[in-house]
Amino acid sequence: MISEAVDFHFLLLENYKKLKISENQLAIIMMIDHLIEHGDQFVTADLLSLKMSLDIKEIDRLLADLLTRGLMEYTTVNGKTVTSLNPLKEKLYREFQISVSKENEAKNSETISNQLSNIFEKH
Image (cartoon, rainbow, N blue to C red):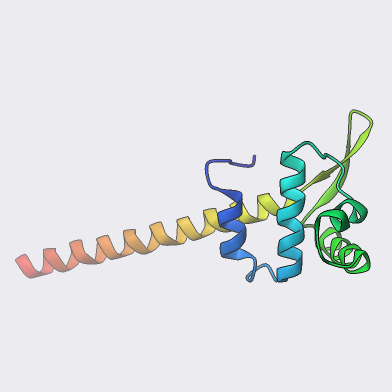
């Protein structure tokens, strides 16, 4: 499940380049998240064009790319279509878990190396 313990915006800004998200797509994602948080459950290119300076055709193209790449989705909840960034959030949280795991492995490896060198120095 998606963990809210780690800030989505932080992870997005730290990893958007790695996920090959353009700056325009980044702005769209941030605006979608903002609109969802403020009660707009179904976010369209038309709605985004009212809030952003990007051309509606460009917004539509970028939204289609985000959908195709599985970074956002439209789902039906209680008979209503809603916009969701959960696929992107899941990818970001997975990336975060991988990086934490790698950090822990590196620390454990360093600790073991230090312990072994201490053992050999004493004998």
